[in-house]
Picture 1 (cartoon, chains in turn cyan, blue):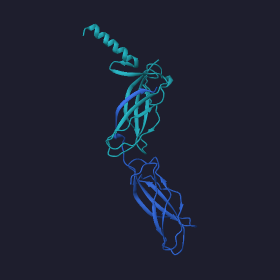
Picture 2 (picture 1 turned 45 degrees about the horizontal axis):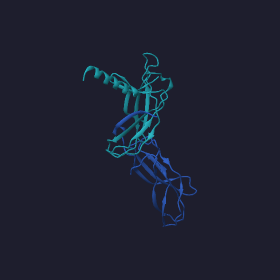
Picture 3 (picture 1 turned 90 degrees about the vertical axis):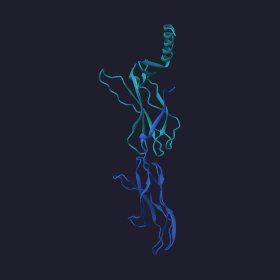
Picture 4 (picture 1 turned 180 degrees about the horizontal axis):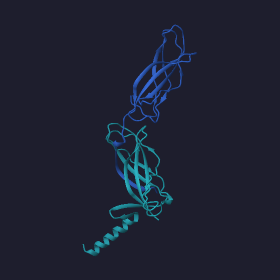
Length: 140
Length: 121
């Protein structure tokens, strides 16, 4: 393939990707409007010896400094949802979970981290079971 | 016996009037967790059917709900208590240690698969 065709294909690919995502180097961030609600679908496998039914929560935080050079990365918490029990080595049904809307004052170009938090029956503590930094970037 | 927070536990039993007069006791259960700070949580009194001397009757105490903040891996003790009309005291007539157990489960056992981020439409 000559250089002209290669450039055209790369340009076409960039246009297609740019429709839904913003590309920064090796990282792909999904664009999201202020006020939109990030959501997450997943399944989980019970790698333990007992069946159990965890609760899940989906959180977000901003990556952009409120004051330049002073990062304030505070997690904004979604609400807990209950899920059915899963037997050992079994895979759950698909779980869909949402978090809070992207706050209107986060501004354009703000990276958004997301994480999935789980807790088990009666436990007061919680643990992050999945996280992706800069999963979204806010659009203007 | 495996239980989970929110489950109701109870005890069904047969009691015999080993005394010399007819009477109608009240029964209730009390539960506590194996947490060293746990104290007995008392259920409601349930009036039993009266029984003549030497007779027996099958009875049940009131349900107890396992509290939602009792963590996994906890074991639970239960008492059966009784009182008779006109008395202010109560007596533990039977006690079971570690009779119930909330299974030990760990968040670390969760392996997330097929993750997909999206924006809610």
